[in-house]
Image (cartoon, rainbow, N blue to C red):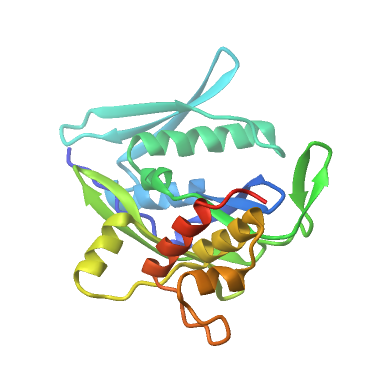
Length: 242
């Protein structure tokens, strides 16, 4: 049996809010059970896979069985967690998605970079929450690319948009090095520039001062390159906190 699931397309990946802090929130990449079922149908055929559920010590487990070339069934199981809304249904769906990960279906999502987005938040006890609960209502993965290494698929490029505007753009070190080797000019991503703004505030300096420190004209700014971003980070990290 030689089964290989492709990498997920952008419209097959959903986003949800992870941790919320004073300066913003992280977004997590995930897939839903419908994507898993559709890919299983496409790759192995609807008659060649099945699912089963069982409860073990109060925990819901799901197994996905795929028919081998000789007609035998190969099973892989995993445990789910309860949903905040429908506990039993959510636990069943979650265990199914986790079992699909065991078949390497969507496992590349585990290689996602940290997606941090600056946004307005407010304190709620000892934690923070989004000031606008619809902050990321129209946020989606607009582009994603992968690289294969040692039989493992990893995310190499990721772009996220909100209402059609890019709010996060990332590429792996491998992609950056290859582009630089070709003489291509690479620019700092929106998330990297947001990080510099936050670091300026932490160090007690203005963004104007930072631009002057890296030799850029603050009155006529040009797009920041990766080289300038690296210089700015080195300068700011050497400064004491405000």
